[in-house]
Length: 196
Ligand code: 3PG
View 1 (cartoon, rainbow, N blue to C red):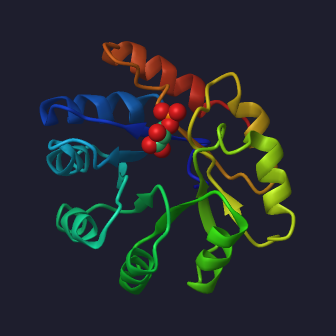
View 2 (cartoon, protein in one colour; view 1 turned 120 degrees about the vertical axis):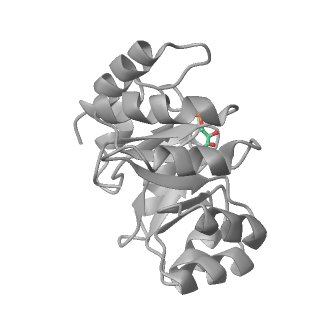
């Protein structure tokens, strides 16, 4: 979460595009890449992206232990989930792999803290009340750090990143549909230059 200010959230339809995409993102300065488990190409995409020097490739949208086992076989380096269940939380924390579970309420956060977790994805960030909601939520949980994701843009990211407990933000704006690799690299460069 401290490697770069933005974690690109990637939905990859064709694994053949994964490596050039990772190269463009890394070249633009974003090394931490979240490949979502929303397409049948995701596992191959993780394997392909891991070939790119400098890339740190994790799996996102991991919602159950079956998917967790699959992404571990693909050598995912970190796990992101949209929410937190006991079953998934216990499996991942027991494995030692870095885990960023989604939270949106105080109860979610308390469940995560009970599992020994301190770093959370605030999701879906904008529709869960935005920065105002995160500030109110974070106040009693001084030890928690956040990666807000969901509805964040290049324009809104600086405001989120200026809040101390926010270590980075996640977003899909870096890889718009139909963008060329040159465009992705340029968008990554802008995102990587955001101040924290
Ligand atoms: C996610 O999967 O984390 C979010 O859907 C990404 O949100 P965004 O597309 O609004 O950036």
